[in-house]
Length: 224
Length: 221
Image 1 (cartoon, rainbow over the protein chains, first blue to last red):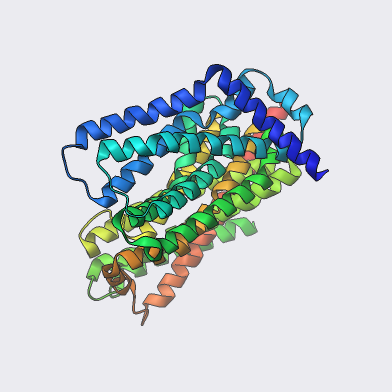
Image 2 (tube, rainbow over the protein chains, first blue to last red):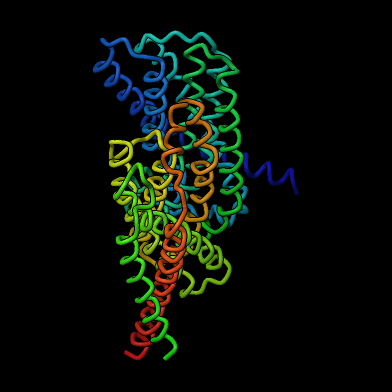
């Protein structure tokens, strides 16, 4: 039973990756959006010597807006292509949720892997503590996809999707953004693990709470 | 008939609160006259919390019962809560101008938390407006209201600690907010809190009675 659950969740993930690779629609949109924002930020602020706090806030603002442009896609495309019914027949809601959650996390990981080097180059950032920086970014990504995956499913049932996704996500994501910006600030400013301890704890707690709440509520949203 | 007496009683209580809140000495000497807003601001913030808690309870109940009335109760309480939340934000902002010299500051956790509540329930109401089918509207919005709720403790319990550690000067804010609840202050405050709470439940019941009448009307037609 359990191995069946995992196989099916991975099948949902594999299906999403395969359809994505055919068009590369969300990855392109996600990356180009992030890249454009980065260029705009760098072009307008690059001449100034920015403090560490501003740099870490800008980094997360870019990731936040880029994810707002693409992360709702996993459920919206199912509703648009009328494939949601087939998916409902294929597996239990928790399986679908797990597949989509991993897919969104993967999408954001690829985005950050591409964005971070460019950010370091364009904004002239020096990172004294790479391990801490990567841990904060990874935890931030997990929290971000953990909170927005179910909101993507909510938005897929509504009429005005694009604007609504950002409106619904922002208040829920605020604690995450505060903790992620604080943690990045500690990693860039040299405060180290001791300075980032509270932020890292908050990021872990946030991801656990959001994924648990989503797992409980996803049944209602998916079948509603 | 009983309802009539309760309404008259509520009217007398609220009139009394308004009269005595302006005629007795100001509750806080350093701030002076402006501190009278405290009799109204804190009940508004309290009712924001009560109304959103009622919204949450009926949202959870709706997911079990799927009764249209529970969905309406949940929605109506969210609407009332948003009204109280706007009033609490405005009165708090005026109070902040008098005590701290600015209408708005992001470093005060209480301001931040009430603002987040406003955003969450603004999003909740726009989500409802964007879903056409009534049954689905109820389920999806109930799920969002339950999902958004866990973020509230972050702002009430966790954020203040993190922000105090970042801005130690903020502890002055708490000293300013300490009221000497002596003399006539405590009784007026408690009566104010009580009568505004009754006002909320009266409004809540009124909206539901109106909704039931409209339902039977539309069934007859």
